[in-house]
Length: 257
Image 1 (cartoon, helix red, strand yellow):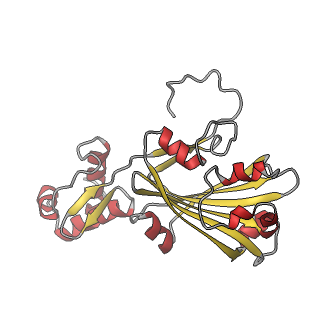
Image 2 (tube, rainbow, N blue to C red):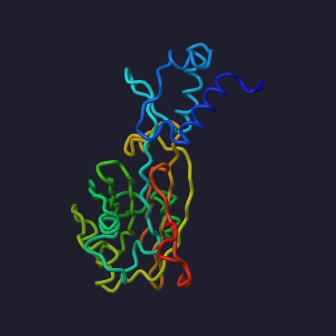
Image 3 (cartoon, rainbow, N blue to C red):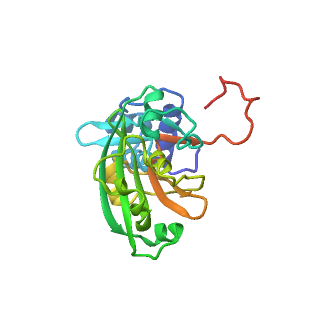
C-alpha cells in the first residue's frame, strides 16, 4: 500500500494520465464526484489532489466548468538571431520571428520618460533615478499573452536618436534605427532567470497558479558603452529559447528545435 497521502495518490494518477494523453491539452477532467467514486476518496481529498495539479500549472479550474488540462502551444525563440541585423527581417525581430513561425503577432505599446530603476541603472552605468526612456511592449502570439518587454535607454542617447521618445513603434526596430545613426550595437550580454510572477505580471500574461515566468535581460553595447537594457518577461509554460553558437554545419535540419 502506498505511503503517500491519498490526495497525492489522486494527483499522481491524474498526472500520469495527462502525460500519457488520456486527458490531452484542453480536455476536461471528470467531475469531483466522479473522481471521488473512482478513488474511493472524499471530495475534499480529491479537491486537494486537483489543487496540487493546479499549483503545478498542469490544469486550470473555472467556476462552474470544472477542471481543464492546460494547453501548451509552445513558441520557440531563437535568441541568437533575434537582433542579428544580417538576418532578413521585415520590421522588428518579434514580428518577423512570430510570422515566420506561422503564428500571428500583435502588441500594445507605450513610451515614457522614467527614473532608472536600480537594476537597469547598474547595467546602463548611469545613476539610479536618472532619466531613461522606457519603451514597453505587451506582446501576443495568436491573441494569447506571450511576453512583456521593457527597454530602458539612457537619456544621453536621445540627442542622437530622438525617435526613441516618440509614442509610436519604430517600424524598422530600434536596433536598426540606432545603427542607421551610427550608434551600432556590436555586442550584448544576456542574463536568464526564472521566478514566480508578481501580481502585475500574472495579470498581464494571464498566468495561472503554479506557472513561473522566464526573465531574459539583454544589455546591448556599442563600441564604448552600454546603450540599452531590455528585460523580457515570458510565460514560462508557453515559451522556449535556444541559441546558436559556433559552427553548426554538422547539425541536421530535421533535428529538434
